Image 1 (tube, rainbow, N blue to C red):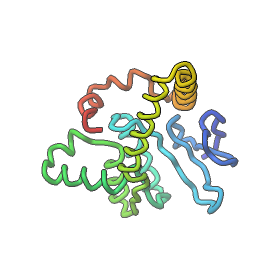
Image 2: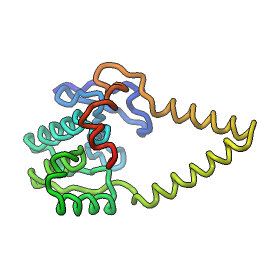
Image 3: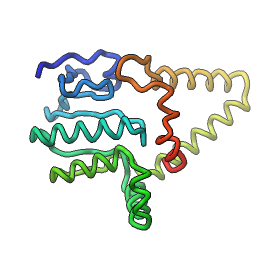
Image 4: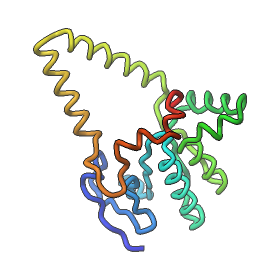
Length: 190
């Protein structure tokens, strides 16, 4: 498989090194690189939570690596609090697992089918919620403090937009992905 260089626009936040994808992993949501300290190969699968296309991409990527005996472990974007809460929900209401399918559970199940370890790799939800509350308070203060607060608010919105909104292109999800009925069905719990 011949590697191809990932455009700089898809390497945001990654240390200086050559990022590559291979023809078997050429989806725009996949970043394949070597971790610079250890040299371990890392494959990041970008996902839109609960989106069926993301669920399928995670499953196919892990299955492909597992079948080639190239799967070391899988890290999912969840903390122990959220993971255990969801596990309890599925235990109490097993039918929900079918309807609330997501890329994290699918990645876990697929990795375990290959007898590979699964690691929870997110900060605890309470830390995230505390940061959101703080940001919300700061935003309200900015909105209530013209003109300096308004300018600060506008700068932060622009910076967030520039960092998070892709320019699109082949292989990227579009804004219409938010309207997938399967995603809308699970939106209240995501």
